[in-house]
Amino acid sequence: MSKLRSLPTTGALTGILESLEFFRDPSFAKKRFNRLGNVFETSMLGQPMVFIQGDKAIADLLSQPEAIEVWWPKSVRQLLGSHSLANRNGAAHKARRRVIAQLFSSSALQLYSPGIINLIDELGEELITAKTPLPLAGKMRRFAFSVIATTVLGLEGNDRDKLFSDFEIWTKALFSIPIALPGSPFAKALKARKRLLKKLKEILSQPINGKGGLDLLAGGLDEAGIPFADEDLGEQLLLLLFAGYETTASALSCLMRELLLTPQIEIWLREEIDTLAWPPTPEQTTMAYDPANAPRLDALVKEVMRFTPPVGGFFRRTKQSLLLDNIIVPNKRVVQVALIASNRHGTGDLDIFRPQRHLENECSLKLMPFGGGGRVCLGKSLAELEIRLMVVGLLHKLQLEVIPDQDFNLRQIPSPSPRDGLLVKVKV
Image (cartoon, rainbow, N blue to C red; front, side, top):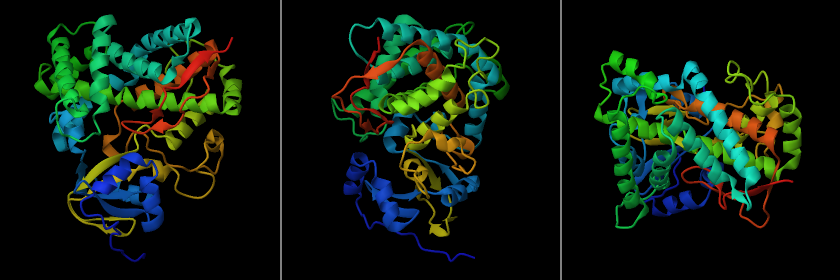
C-alpha cells in the first residue's frame, strides 16, 4: 500500500501574488505541479485552494460525491445568482437538472438541427461576400449564442442582438474581482445581469407555444412541482445561455485556429470532409458526423478539447477529509481540477497538438472538457453537435486564410480565444 503523504504547499499566505500570477500565466499550475507533485495547496486572495492533476487524483475526487460539493469564486456566484443550478447542491440541484436536461435530449437536438444548419449557411455566405477580413472568433461567438438563444428561447433579430450585447458584458466579468466600483467590469456586469433577467422574465411571461426548446420544459416542470414562473427559472436560463455558448464558441475558435495555422492538419481533415454530404438529411443530422462516420473529425475535436479545453478547470469543496492520490486533503478545502495541466500530464508528445493520437490504439487519455461526475455540463451534446456541423458545413463551402501580423496567442479568461479575433478572408 502506498504511504500516505501530507499536503504540499506553496507557502503563500495572502495569495495576492499567487492570484496575479494565476491570471497572467497559463502555466501557473503546471509549474507548481512540477515542483510539488500532482496535489498541492496554495492561497488565492485568502482562499486556501488545492490544485490537482492526473487520473488518480481526479478519480479519487469524483468517486466520493457525498464528500464534496460544488464551489465557484465569489464573482461567479454573484453573477450567476443564488438560484442558479451551478450554485445548488443536493436534491434541489438534481430536480432542476433533470428538468433542464430535457432541452438537450436526442429529440431536442433533432428539433434544433435545421436552425443550426441555417445559421451555418448564413455565416458561410457572410464570409464569402465580405469585402474586408472578418474576426472568425467573434463570428463563432455570435453563432454559438444565436443557436442557444434561437433554439431554446425562440428569439430572433433585434431581441436576440440586444440579449447578446448584454450577455457579452456579463460574461467577461464572470472571473473578475467582485468589487462593484462604478465603471468596473463587475459593476457593468451586475447591471447587464439585471437587464438580462428582466428580458428572460418577459420571455417566460408569454405563451410558450412555439418558443423553441422552452416547449420541452413545460411537462417536466409540472411533474417536478416547479412552477414555470418560478423566480429561479430565469437564472437557470441565464446559466444555460452561458454553458451552451461560451464553451462552444471557445472550442470552435480554437479548432479553426489550429486548422488555419497548421495547413497539414486541414489537408488531412479535408480528405475525410470531402466524403461527407452537406447538409445532412433531417433524419441523419445528429449522427451524420459522429465518430463512426467521421473519425478524423472526432479526433480533431478531442484534440482541441485536450489541448485547449474550453474550461480550464472546475471546482469542488470538501465536506470532510479526503485522500487524493494518497495525499490527505483536509475538510473545507476548495479543490480545483486543473484540466489544462492534467491533459498534458504523462509520457509522450502531450505538449504537441496532434489529433491523430486519438486514432491510435494505445491512446488512453481521459478527457473531461465539460467537467466530470454528476455535474457534467448539460450543454455537452448540443455543443458537440454544433462543432461537428460547423466544421463540415464551413469546409464544404469555402477555404479560409488568416491575415498575417495578428496576435494568435490565446486569452484564457473566461475561456480560450485568439487575442486578435482570428481575422480571416476567403481564398479566391
